[in-house]
Amino acid sequence: MTKTLKCISPVDGSVFAERPVASQKEAEAVIASAKTAQKEWAVRPLEERIKLVMAGVAKIGEQNDEIVPELAKMMGRPVRYGGEFGGFNERASHMAKIAEESLKPIIAEESDNFERRIEKEPHGVILVIAPWNYPYMTAINTVAPALIAGNAVILKHATQTLLVGERMASAFAEAGVPAEVFQNLFLDHDTTSHLIAGRNFGFVNFTGSVGGGRAMEIAAAGTFTGLGLELGGKDPGYVMDDADVEAAAETLIDGAMFNSGQCCCGIERIYVHSSKYDAFVKKAVEIVSGYKLGNPLDEKTTIGPMANVRFAELVRKQVADAVEHGAKPMIDASLFPEDDGGAYLAPQILVDVNHDMEVMREESFGPVVGIMKVESDEEAIRLMNDSHYGLTASLWTQDPARAAKLGAQIETGTVFMNRADYLDPALCWTGCKDTGRGGALSEIGYLNLTRPKSYHLKKA
Image (cartoon, rainbow, N blue to C red; front, side, top):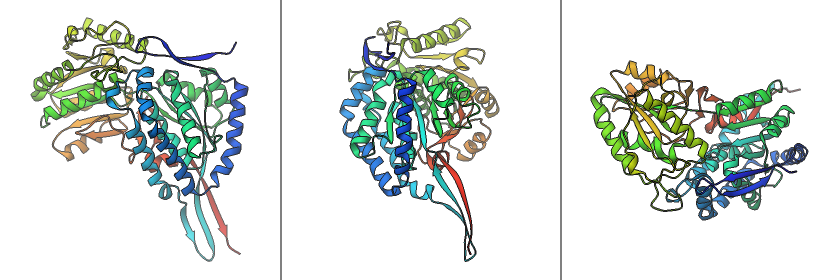
């Protein structure tokens, strides 16, 4: 009996889509066709590859009116926010813009006697395993530069956003990218691991949980397959004594609650200097109390259901545990009667929290944030670094030098000042500790999606 993957809609619990899982034999045939097609793709002029990739990006843009409600039904993001094409296009466009400079050879010598250079060659076939929370933007981070660099791409998307990979591969093929060069596969975890262990890929990029990242490393052990891993996060914000409280609250609370808190670089814990603490908490409660929880297909809804009931159950457990150990919930539950005990979850702000509580240590990935009072930069740094994770940190101050000094002491991949929850494609998207390894986007993204090959030519 053929195994199927089912996308259960958080809107109403119905099966929104299902697809049969490819067998290992079927997957290996797809990969073999990609390996053959990649060789021809890699010798095409760079300008041609860029043009075709950007045509594929444009095709996705043409489908945005269909994609937005489809995403709402698959993972619960309200339609009022208009989907992901803005970021999708921004990231692909930047990687296209820097491709020629990033991929050009490094010339060590060009003389009458010697030609010495380093070329940047594609890995071959790259497996991209993309998550459901920002299914288009996270996928394009690797898909666009991988194809531009001359690789073939196999995309395995999350079951919760089952149709995204299929839609992307179809759009790129319609735009002229050879069908075998960019393919979507529906795979289960075991087959994925067997394919990686079987040395089927030149590089694997995975965005997901820490447990999933460990599974990737176990599967790749001994194969020397390159891995890019963007895993969990518990990103902090720090509001200093000279910060603009209104601006800090608006941005940090949006960073904590947008997409029902289901953001890789969402704000999950906030530290506020004692002189600004009361004003910050008051503003934060005011903001969240004004949200409208409901059906994501309703234009009035500002916060939709979590993508899956089990994700909401984790957040409820963290909140209950924190309250049991002394935390104080600041949001009146009666403001959100739509909270059904299932995927629809009321947002919450917790005060009187500490690092003995799971809600301040482990990833919540939901609409809850803890706020702690601090007395100094030193205390804030200690607390921000008291985490297994390190993706981003958001610092709020009027003093750039102070932010830079603190940023140098924070164990994180990106330091923000007076902003949060944004992925700049000109900068490397990376993390440390349990957040993973490697880096996407920017010139460094191209370095990870290619391998160096040296030429040392002595002229006769």
